[in-house]
Image (tube, rainbow, N blue to C red):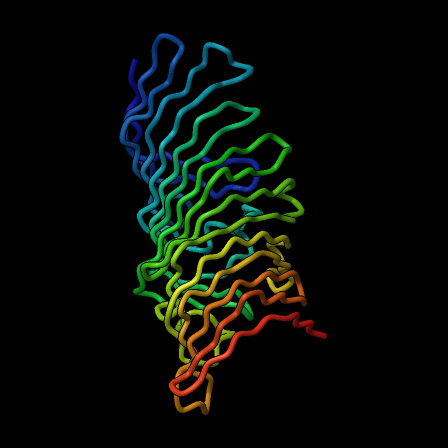
Length: 277
């Protein structure tokens, strides 16, 4: 049979906003429910939904769903622990594929953040109207947290990828790995708050980190980085310094290996250890 929804609304019991003003068709038969071109609102955000729910095993209730949020706003994330403290302004275009059952599911997530302004205190601030995309694939277990098998983050032409894990959504401690090849310094200077110098050139890096989503300022990182003809002009310097170096770092310690630096008139090789604090 088939059911036509007209301005239909429903509320979930936990952690989610109400689905309101849903219009579209639901068909059923052979133990399956099919959602066809449903349009409505999730809280204050427009949403499009389609997919299939298999009711043959009612205890598992397998499903495959596709959701599209053309203009997702921050207020509609407030009941989701992973995102409730993420502060941003402006609408995000988010799409989400979910495949699983009542115990676990796999997801594919894509977000276009070009129109969004957001900030990680003490680290970076991104203004609207800049090319910015995020993609992730992973899985969620009931009472078992989130595993991100791979993710990618693109901002103004630079691309960083990696993995992540959040064992418990109610206490969002996390681990993360990130890597990039030929990460260009110049287009990123406008976003990162700890640079006080003109900069050009590129770098390769592999980094692992840990922290808590409720306190991103407490992030701890360690990893390695290769600087490739990185041109730096610190404040009050007349000319650029060009640096090639292999670096390793962990919290307050920086190991400098096989470093070379040159300016217009001189050059030097260097290595050593820098310990802060």
